[in-house]
Amino acid sequence: MSKLTAAIIEDEVPAARLLSTIIKRLRPEWEVIVLPGSVEEAIAWFSTHSHPDILFLDIQLSDGNSFDFLSAANPSSLIIFTTAYDQYAIRAFTVNSIDYILKPVDETRLLNAIVKYETLKSKDYQQTENYIKDLIQNLQKQEKTYRTRFLIANVDKFWALQVNDIAYFYSENKITFAVTKSGQEHIIDLSLTRLEEQLNPKRFFRANRQVIVCIDAIVHAAPYFNGKIILHVKPIYKDKITVSEEKVSAFKVWLNF
Image (cartoon, rainbow, N blue to C red; front, side, top):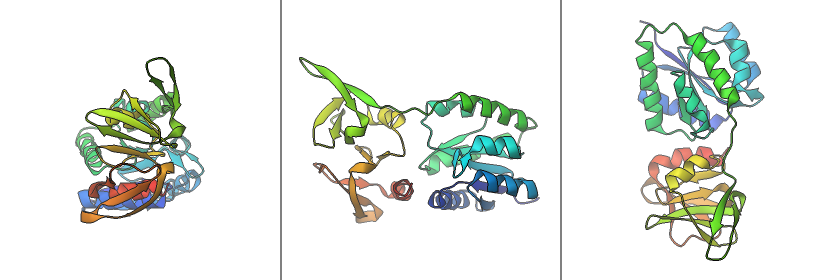
């Protein structure tokens, strides 16, 4: 039996390396290939090589998007997308029995996607081309949108708080607070989990169960105990903001976007 081949098309080198490392750890028997992260180079590679069994494909590439690549290369591979699309816009992926991984990559989510692929592969799966065409049509209908403001109200007035003015969010006693860059605090009527789904993942990172931090608020990061990272932010947070050990690799990739 020939070895299963997995290919990665990702224009961010650290993200590609992280994804490759995790795949090899989860499936050491697979052959993992990291391909060029541009539409033009990826098309050229697919025109001269056997197509891999499974393709991990970033939506935004260095010279375009994956739709251009899919239309030109027409890969026979089953596809798992790696993307910064928010979870609402991306649900169309699963309708077509092709999965996605939201960046930064979570190992558990990646494992679930691989298992789904293996389940499909074990069946008489002859409709890949149609699935891909349907997928492209669904994705092209989606708009990549994130929350831009929150309605803030007190006793005698209300106003819009712009997301661009927020340094970080934190949860305390089941109440969520937004802290602005000027140090003001406002109560937000959403859990951190719901917020994480609505915020731009290129700008906001879930450091731990209590805090979501904006990249603009990070002054610097430093090693901490037990493999964690401690974040120094502005305005100063009343407690320590630490990135858990299992999120450190993803945090470094996010910081390097």
